[in-house]
Image (cartoon, rainbow, N blue to C red; front, side):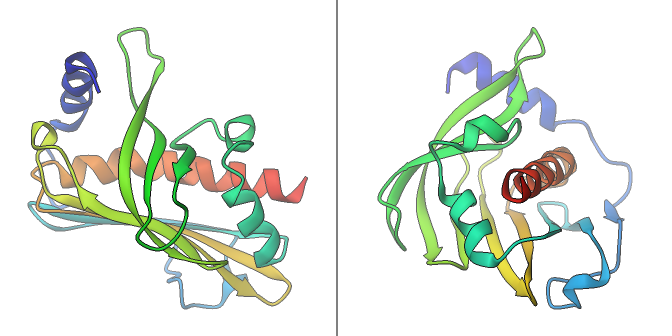
Length: 194
């Protein structure tokens, strides 16, 4: 990432919150009845340097079909206009990958594509993600970003969660990521169902 991109990303993250951040669009947890809601999104500020986000959407398809679409990283940019754009590398638990991820905008308002190295957390057909450090230039700490598929009868609950730990901008990160994660989830649903 260039210095300009880091500066832009950092400037997006420093808007202070006057009170702890807590937003919930439904009361559903990932273990709740899958059919209870179509979409869920919530964020919580757990401390000054720790915040979490959880989003989900019900997809009218089997977990295998959702997983197949999620793992087709070459086709992903055709349907994903936000956040995850693809991944290259050793796709297995503990594998080293480079993730293409949109976050922040440049001075023209265009999304910034970041290529970020990660060590994968991977369970075939169930979850993929990472838990890696953030650069010191954007506050340090680390994130725990997971994509999961969960069977719901003949449907699938797709869950995208993240946790920002030991970072002074944690609440700002999750506030910016909530709509982006929900957008990705909705676009994945359309890609799978069409």
